[in-house]
Length: 508
Image (cartoon, rainbow, N blue to C red; front, top):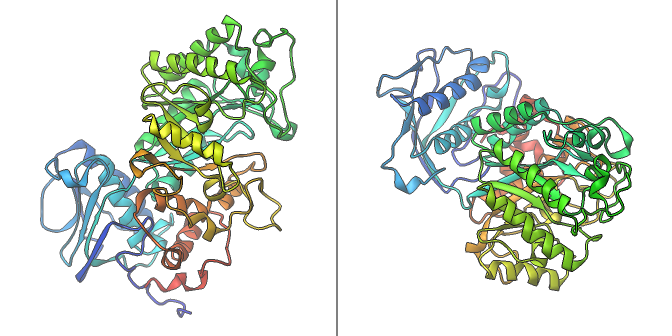
């Protein structure tokens, strides 16, 4: 144990999550002092990142850390250099020496990711919102880092249980710390419709009134959704909205009975069963509805993707499913977006450029897996979300009260034990767009529960998306070192027996 009052040792240069691509330890170290300035040059984009960095550092360090556009050989230097082509859209270089700490990137996203690495290289107390003793030292050397996959996502199901704008902002900040760059919002399901649609206003009246178990519901106005999108963008996350069709639609059917085959009003579903609801594929009003909804969602979504679900449509015949998905994909293209659907898209004809999200697990049939490989052979890019690795709503152990277990138990070591490049037979690495960690909310109702289920397993997916290779025997030590940071941030987490938490305080 470290004696009370002992100054923290500098964090080893590579002991961060996700693991950097290249770490070259060097001599010396950089220590923040009352004289440290944040040098942002002449670009507004670097200043924006500098403002964010100062906002993180000032409360805990108690240092003034003024921003300046003047160049210099000292201080924290944020540099955007279009000539740094090797760093790509999200890569960065961090150089720490006695005189200065320099963060370099080609694009603002890379500079922002460099700041997240810097945060992890400083003592965990840097995350607190009151003055801490320090010292604030970064070991000498060079980190050069680029991501393995372009898509590194996290999904939150706000349909089964609703989460407020403030709750999502908190989670966005946590995702950003680990270089997640996509926020997938599951906005509609049998239990609730959570986004206002002007042309179909009852969706957020009858359709948003409740939740799983019959509790209170909720929805986002368009202004609130825009607030989420803009906040995520400020942390370099792209929001991907999901409107789940043609199944998982009981909330919509309860709001508008004319979407039902018999025109009879149904109740909003408050249970957890799936596969029983469907839009009426043979009615033209169905496609008026789909067009209006996707048009309005596209208008307030600046990102490139619209997710149209398509999973567990057991109440839709195979023929009707293929017809519906073809027409729905055409609507997405009509409004200038790229379609994303769950991997059941294999039961339809994928649109050019379509992306499919795989959520199968070790128990998924060989036939279904072959269908996904067939999508890849047609040029469909894949987001991998294997349920028994990346579903954060699953139980850690059989004794847990919180969570589901239909894909098995997902202890922390198991969540790390996969490689996206080789996970699906017949799917080459260049067909993999990236990875996504999903948290479904049948049993998750509060921020504390969401964090407990996400941490530490979220970091497994974050690393699998960013870093090449990696062994659990090494990752578990870097994971343990994150615990004091979560405690400083007030993040609830599961103290898995597979992780050596006791060593986290050493800092070495």
